[in-house]
Image (cartoon, rainbow, N blue to C red; front, side, top):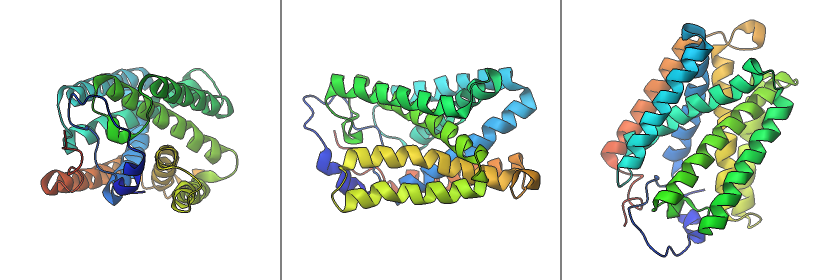
Length: 263
């Protein structure tokens, strides 16, 4: 699913108050998105083990607020600003799902549909207010708020869904295979005309979370839990370096900003 296909569903905006503040949907978008999900998963676990759950959640929440404040303050898409906010959403979204399960004892079989309902509510409110869910219409403050609310909900949902599959028999590697297959389905459905561009995009966007998180967990966790045992810190660092490299490339080349800069 590229930007060209998503443009098919772009609505006519009555008024644009700023440039569209999300990147073009290219292969780099999906690579970085998966990387942020895995890095957020292991970084969240690493912070919780190092600082303790309560300080980790507090620090993660503060970092999320600061990163979103910067994202809302800029008037156009800036690669490092946007992707920093996505990383912080990933870290805090993981924490939100973990707090429900570990802190409050809510099983994944309950939290997963709960977050699904929350995401559906965000989409319903967004569409009722704006008559579009297209990422090519993020050019007003209200649409930007809806967009980031949806992003946060997708991360929480994806975290719960990934942990659910990992604990009901699939394991981490099995979950990677499951979600790798699942993420191909909306693309194929859209390719053959069975699913419109916008729902295909958001479906794939949700699935990137459990895909990346399951892959990172498989790499980081010990053999007793079905992982490779590489450790939380090394995997977090490696995925962070990869994110920095890809985002740095996009910031210089601006290959994902051509359409996003149009007023």
